Length: 93
Image (cartoon, rainbow, N blue to C red):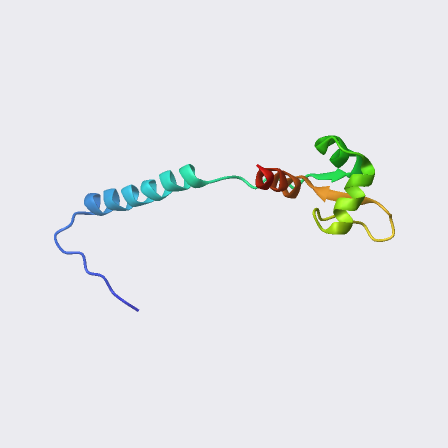
């Protein structure tokens, strides 16, 4: 383990140096921190409304691999992640 010797530094100077270092890191964290939002899932009908298309187009896009569907086994329900659909919109532009 490395050791550190502090020569000619007062306890107040050491405390100030530590506080300044912590404040710098906190300011950086505040600038770059983005809270994680929970994923929102949309139904086939909501996706059709979002893109202003027919529900059969949503089915075709899923079969072709343009969009990814998620489901609960045995329920027959199909969902799509809003974040993935929004990324698709950004790629088109």
